[in-house]
Length: 439
Image 1 (tube, rainbow, N blue to C red):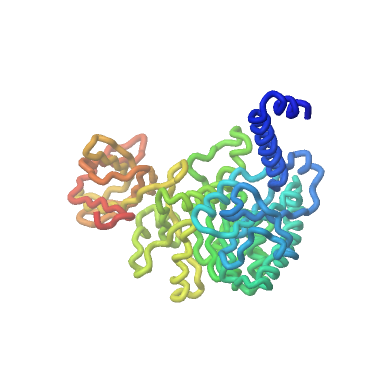
Image 2 (cartoon, rainbow, N blue to C red):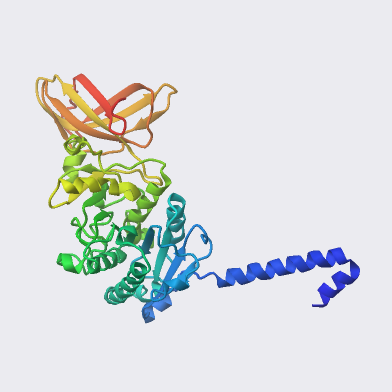
């Protein structure tokens, strides 16, 4: 290190500064090298196939930027694990390309910002990465055993099942369910983010995620017509935009891999949006998406004194409802916008018309505030029937919410290219905010 000797020869102060910077650089370099990272593979690994190897990466508020690897058989060696706090276990799913999930770091950061917890990322990329999906399903059973060992050790060291919360994505949702079964459904909560449909559709409750696998199970379905599971699996099952095509996702295969995974991934981004608290996304219990769209399920009077269920992190407020409902299974529908935070502001629309003859058609609504800003209804409801002096119920959703509405414009259309153009004679109309009913 001749350069350090030369610096001291030239000036003791300069030499000390250079030495201090050198030590700091070495410490920083060593620290960066010691921080474990999520396994990063590639499509080549997927073609060859990977054997199961699991890393349990622990982050807390004390080590947010540098994970600690946990040994499921020796938790006492951990520096940062605090079993008096909530433990959140995040489990990813099948990985076709081998790259780390794009959301993995952000969800960890958002959870730690929300609550001082132990956040454990289950990195089973070696095992999940394969072009042959059934291999990943088989490897998932090994992950279940490792997580059972982890929770056994947690309990042996003073933790409670009431402090365990698992978030499973796709295939990871079923892994969480299998772990929950091992503890007779006593784990506090499981959140399933678009649980995988392939290999699990039609299976018995013992062979997939089920609402009995934890004290409370909430599920978000965003791709039920392809990669996700169609039927309800939890105590409360949310179906944003009906659970199929999500706004903003590509509609054709020419968009590449985003066409295949965008709808499926949206469940994760909707959950993360709930952690940011830009808005609370409300679900409306209903027997079908069609009935919700036609304004038949936009009130929650039947569930009072509880409010309508809220999507994501705070969905467990719905848990009190389970005391009254048996079996405790509810479907909830709602619509979202096309980008983060995906909020849509819903209004119920009641219209009384006085046309002598009945009319059937579609209503489009545009509202303007005092400053001249406008927003248009984004919900494309089915055709509504309008009868003389009878109230018709509709649902409208807007990307923005105005406090002071100065103008409401309605357009009625039958959407027929040929035939007469009917007018709808409105006798009375009421536009009511569902998020703020007192307005």
